[in-house]
Each structure stands twice: as structure tokens, then as C-alpha cells.
Length: 324
Image (cartoon, rainbow, N blue to C red):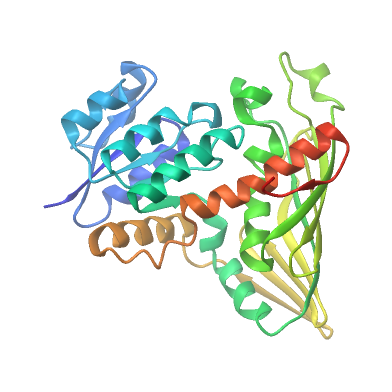
């Protein structure tokens, strides 16, 4: 019997996952759930076995999926996960887990109680660049890191609203925060400054900050700064640069650049991180072996504790302890 997968959401990420899943042996995309029947009907085109739904509960009742992929905007999380937890259905969820910590913490309690297998869409962890960096850092002393997500403002209404996306640090820059945690360990304290500079005057209804910087104290004693902006006319750069006693390890979306002892080495990503992410989750569903899943829901909550602390620090003007 092929594994039956339901997908909630009809955006770009839903299709990324659906295309990968539909090319796997013994896996069937069983359904799409959209905010309207029309959106769901458009999403199922090209996936012969998939049915269209505008209601999650109805999809779960009729399809009885083995697992569900949640690819919805930050504000839409909560009720979907609660239904899956109640029914004991494993899920892969795209980041972030919400616009604030209250909902993810509640969901996590249910996930742990049910012993559910979960995965969170922090695909940078699955890149060759991140994996090679992790290997190299085992024999190096990490001093500090600089992270950045410098780009333009996504052209969707909910992203511009604080209550819709949670803001850039929570919605986008979370990838760099997660990569930092993955490679450098846990963050204890955050001090951040965010500001409104240009986008309120350019677009209507903008309530998110368009520039921000956060300084992070790590449990290891290392320090980091992660900055972001969404006020540029086009994407500039995304990445995490780590400074060690042996040189610089620079992780970019498509490659790793290592600068040590006058030598520069470039390692390009060869494998598709989204494919790796899906293979790890599907393997876990089939075998019960979740060791290949590099970010669980519980781990993703820890990343959100850091991004939430940054927002609270920016709003209050004082350092915030992570997890409090």
C-alpha cells in the first residue's frame, strides 16, 4: 500500500513538496486543502490521485492520510495541528510555526504527549554546505557568527502585517537563527533593535519592521549578530558566516566558502535539500526511524523562542532571556 499524504495549503511550497512526493515510489499525494474549493481544485491538477478539499476535517475523514504536510501562512497555524495531534497523524510543517509562541507551545505539549513523528521545514540543515560546515566545526573553536537576510518585501498581503507573518525576523530570518542553533548551539539571551524606515511609505498596510539587528549570547560563550531588511528593491544576500581560530566558514544558500591560511575553498551544494528533507520524513513514516529528520517540531519551537525573544527585545528596548 502506498503511503497516502495530505497537503494543506496551495502555495509554492505545497507544489515543491507535492512534486517531490509524487516522484517517490510507494507514495501518493492524496489530497490538497485550500482556503477555497477553487484553489484546491487548481492545486490538484497534475496529481492524478489527489482530491480537492476546502475543509481540513473533511479531508482527514475521507482520505485518512498516513501523514500531512502543512504549508500555510504563519497566522493560519494552530487548529490544523490540533486536529492532527488529536487524530495521531504525523506531520511535516513549514516554518515558522506561528506568529507568536503561545500556539506552538500548546501544540508541542500535544505532540509530545501523543509521541507523534514530526518534521519542520528548515531545509538549510539539509544542504551540503551546512553538513560540511558542521563536520569542519567539530575541530575548530567558534568565536562568533554574523547572519543576514537582506532582501525585498514579499508581495503577499499577510506578510506585510505583523499579525499575519510575525515580521521578517520570525518569518524569513528564522532560517539563519535555526542554522545558528544547529551549528553553534543554544542561545541564552537576545538584544534586538528593529525599525520602520521605508516600506510604510511605499506600500499600504505595512505594520512589520523593515530593518532589524539582533545580538545573541550563546550558551557556549560565543556571540552572534543576525541582521535583516526587507526594504531593498531586490534580494541582496542571505547567509551565515562563522569565525573560528582557523579561519572563516561562510554558509550561503547554494554553497560553502572556507577561507583558511590564505586558501579559499568553495563547495557547491550538489543534492537537493528539499528532497533530503522529504526522504528523511518518508523513511521515518515507513520504518519508525526518525534519525534522518534534522528538525522536529520540538526543535523548531526552540528556534521560535529565539526569534520571539528578538521581537520582544526590539519592542521593549531591553535584553530578553530566551524561553522566558
